[in-house]
Image 1: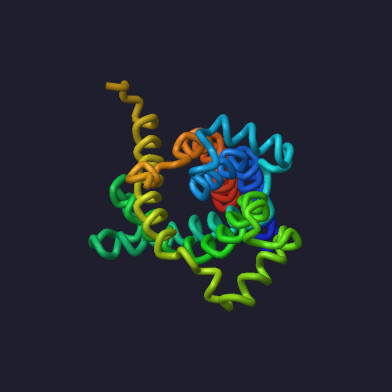
Image 2: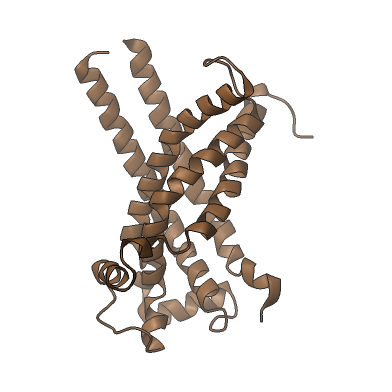
Length: 249
């Protein structure tokens, strides 16, 4: 491939990645903020509607987009690593099951590759998500007196983590992140590949207890549709563009 064509492909891929990440964050951030607030302070909010109304009355519209900067960085970094490692992990799966390098994987094998790739993505996701979550709950933390009002910016949160816990402090919650990401992306990629196979084939459609773990489920589910739709739309267009440029050469 010519250097100019390769550079153009890389630029186009980067553009789609940034555009997809931005679309994903902007559509999903308000729901993610509600989810984090409801999970962190379950006693303060009676439900999604109550959380939305209180957030708007206390902080205004910008309250729904607290933590957007680290969320955007997290999204782009996570998906860059995720989709970069996805191809590598597909080759690992082929080697493990004894398939040729060009052999087509089953939907289950693709799901396993996506699950494996998510472990690498979690390493870049955990630090940025930690900062994001702290920013999203900043108003409640300030109101309770747990933090000073001056500690309400990205860099103040970063400095606070570094001063108290050092660099490893950014990986608080890594085990929980892995427990969420690894099985989650198994079904994420499995469902994606299964849906592609289905539609391509043209076949017809034939204190709180355990509930505390699912606090914020409703905004998470609402967020999933537009956010993940935007993500895969950018991924498919970028992959198609790069493949067309490779084939043209």
